[in-house]
Length: 198
Image 1 (tube, rainbow, N blue to C red):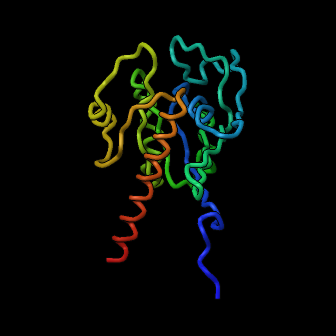
Image 2: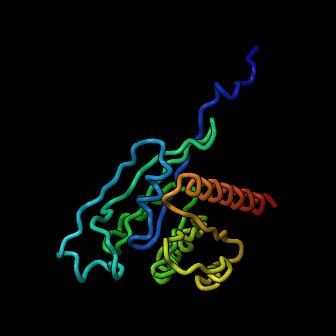
Image 3: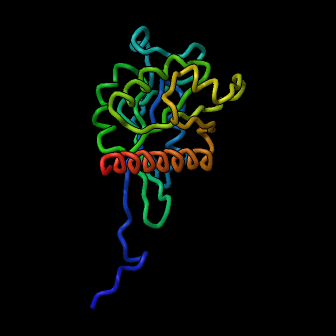
């Protein structure tokens, strides 16, 4: 007679979360802050060749840019491992998004309120693909703070989409965002299964 496996004997489940947003919003910083492994980065130096091609934020001090993805890993519990995929922010690299998002249970849309217009294309992408997402307002030093319901209204978010405030440089803050998107994605999945069963 076999007994049920203990928690130590159960295999950990793994899942994929996408970190997206406009150029320079903090995706690479987010993955680096929270990953328990050395993150894989595909950063390249920005050159004058990208002038007029990449929409670089005015006054940005960025000297590198993600050209494929950022990759990291975080163990949330003994039986849950998150694999993190940060998308490139420039429009010319968006052809990779379908591959990066394939199999993801959810996404975090990082937002800079000083450049809110950069959030609309990623938002449209996740809505069109049916990927559950949350909005995480990355609080930059010296930027004006807005109420989260004002951000939700400005982005015309569907009802129920969580909007939170984070600091992408802070491990605990980034971890809370990952917990929130995981919970939200699981809730959406449960609701979808219940609707199909009724």
